[in-house]
Image 1 (cartoon, rainbow, N blue to C red):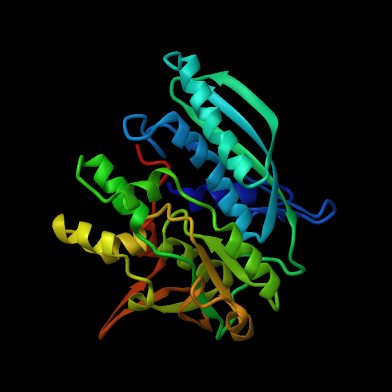
Image 2 (cartoon, rainbow, N blue to C red):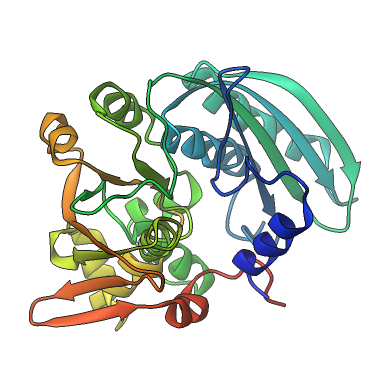
Length: 318
């Protein structure tokens, strides 16, 4: 089974699932967003390829990225850490130094958390942010003729991970993208100011194609993009050329880039900084069996539910 299958079971089991469906839950009576992400050793990271400091930074940044997609201002985090017996005091000190630095940079306070024992290292962070736009975001808010926008480059983190796992040389830019991602909070602030209506926004934590398909699925609409409109990164292209890989595969499925993926109206797009928000396609017609169409010159690839299930990241593979 995969993540979407488990989520469907959970939704069908709970009496009230009205707050489920997005990476952040909006608690209207408190005017706050709440999100939680967990990093598990040998699933989301390896202690052979990262440092405690960078792991601390990343554990916070991935949660701030979800708040960025909700157009929320990050305020507080709580941290639960499950530790194997081999972890020493220096590791903990460096882990929390990384946590502290990201929180200081983004004016976020640590409220507490929990510490337990475990056979492997697990870090779970809950983040709380304040609503800063009069409009809401959800993967189900894409509408026909919306512009499909992205921030930044895609594929860098996936290529960096591939290099680390296979002991390959890669430019620092690619490795840093994987080990020390940055949440797009400045872009989130700009989007919050310019937004004209409720819109579909996600981050690309599980990959660009993954985010696009999840938006298409939740909105019950087809989405069409031109992969050649996505900003090209020379370091990624050169790395892939040297290692006989297709850089476009990393762009589509590489994951953990933590860029914003937005489906919103043309008026909003025209008011955004075109250097930060790139239009790569359009939202098409309503469809009960939605797909993502990826155009590449004279060819096109169609991502259906079956293809998505095979290609997307599986948190539960053994």
